[in-house]
Image 1 (cartoon, rainbow, N blue to C red):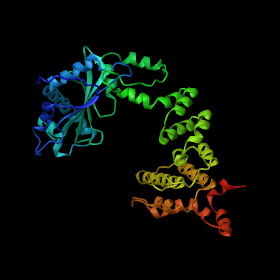
Image 2: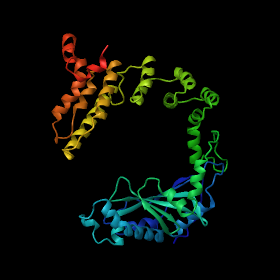
Image 3: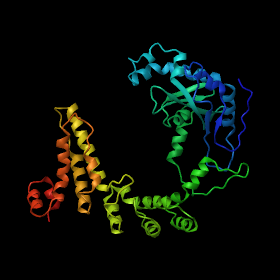
Image 4: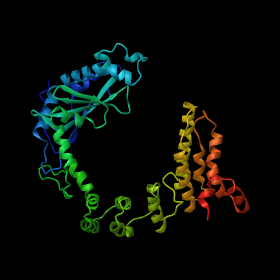
Length: 399
């Protein structure tokens, strides 16, 4: 137990000394040093003018400081209880490190990396998450939801624990009903509270989203006024313009068009032919390349290759089953549509699409199948006429 007291200074994310918690997991380590010396703590805030966490959150932070070892012990016990299920889920039955596990073994498999103090509360204390690294799932990690020293829920770090907290405190149905009747409030710009001279995280996000929320709530007069009065970066203007194009906000499109650089936008809308046609009318080139020097046609060819790969892998696993070519045919039509709009069938970036990674199937035939889609448009004169009489895509270009 520590006599350390927590003092909030306006930062909702910070590094906290939790030596007993760290030591509990590192005491059995065979390495000469443990990479985690302190713990990152984040407090969930609400979008209000109150500059401080609620009392229950502060109580919980103090509780964690005073009960570090107890919390670590309870965490390890919970993980040990769940290990049979984890071993089954991750097919670890044959792994030596997962046989006859003890608490000391769990200390080797798990490292607490951060603490998240939720806004949901019960009986004077907030729920909190221990986020951990774990050796059996280094990508998704481990999340343990706690209330005081009681583990409530166990899972991956994916945001599910908030629902488990309100199930535990009995407010789940109330929250679900409130979501059904949710009414958007008018967007607002926040200024730092004089107590700390800092914005809360939710306020920072509200300020960053202010203009976009004005547009999405159809407050066009306010949006235009805000843009005209502000020094907005080109990347943000493009973001607003993309959103306006996607939702067909004609007034905003016309307002932003003189202010926005159109270069790069076409790659956001490869699946939206109407928007591509609009951009082409405004002078954008269908052969414009992205950051990887690929054209929109090259990207379509990569998708075509991906679908062919799926087909071949399916055939390997299910040799007697039928495979629907619907998506492959649609991909071919997309490629032909880009070509009809002037896409360069000889662009160098297309060549990289022919690089198949598997040798389980005949990639040469697949490459030829891909090239067949372009071949007609890479020929000239009489050669093109002869090939057109034989190829399946002739029906798309009649008349």
